[in-house]
Image 1 (cartoon, rainbow, N blue to C red):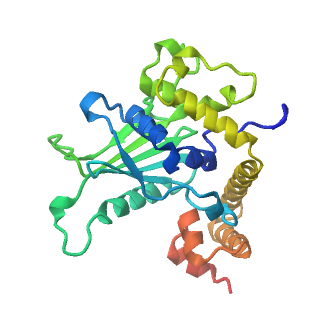
Image 2 (tube, rainbow, N blue to C red):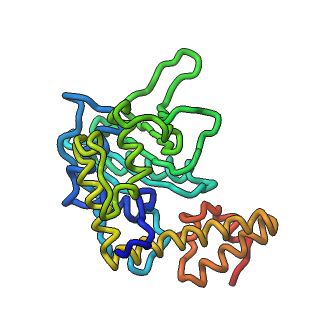
Image 3 (cartoon, rainbow, N blue to C red):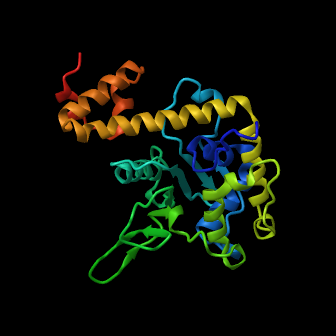
Length: 287
């Protein structure tokens, strides 16, 4: 990697998946989960299985797949972790849908409902999803609005806004949770060859190793090509979605579908990636 090359950071979802979605990096994924979920002592996750491990060859010709990391811990809890850097109109619906699938897929034929364990979604944002709130972590559970009874241990969603953490706050005053939020947003600062990692980051379990993974990925020719492809494809998709507003919904949707069909995507892939409904897809009437 030359001195003037861009350093990709962990808000690049391909890099995020490469770091936290590999069996060889399970300890780093455990550190991330314990920090973002603020788990202490006996409640900390000790062991996990990565259900959809990262394999760079799987993405050779696919630049638009959802790059989430699905994890199961030793007591059976399931986790879906996803980095989202570009505003996607239907993200919450898509994320909720995938999380409910993760929950329901635990139940095999003839299995008892008592075997179901919580499904926990962690969506990490590089933009402000909830501008009406100053909270970094917006947590959602099933709750009775009249008497505040909570249906715990079913489906829980965390929406973590990286931009909500003040960049002026001294690292030494940050909690473990805040340090990880800071690192996810600023990993490129410490990935250049001459950079020095602050002692407050280096001393936190897993953080120095994460920075090392970011450095190695940025120095790897194939990884850089994949990260660049991913970033360019997401920019393209964002521009295509924008055209739906500029040209009118129907014409914009038609253009998006047409361009993605030319890119080799099928109907289901286009609907999954863009949030376009089957009704809108069929009404576009593209032969």
